[in-house]
Length: 102
Image 1 (cartoon, rainbow, N blue to C red):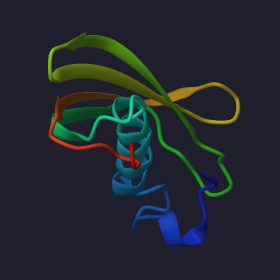
Image 2: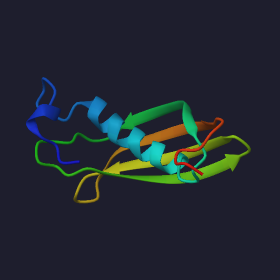
Image 3: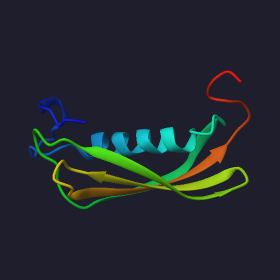
Image 4: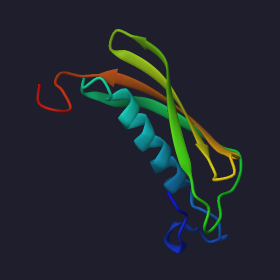
């Protein structure tokens, strides 16, 4: 995600809600990657550095644990220079159904 003017808050830095949305989207792709419908059961985020206009943000998700219907995923959001700007942890819960037709 490239930080644009529309992403800036009143202080001129990227609004945390957009960073959260990027991390949450990576979490959703990761926990639904087995084609088992899965929802967030909870999550938290820690903001470590600011993102500014023009920064390019990338989110990487890693599955930490999967036990039955519950999973734990860590998502790292980094700027183009590799600086970690946020750490997100998501807890997932599988439900009935699939993401794509079987």
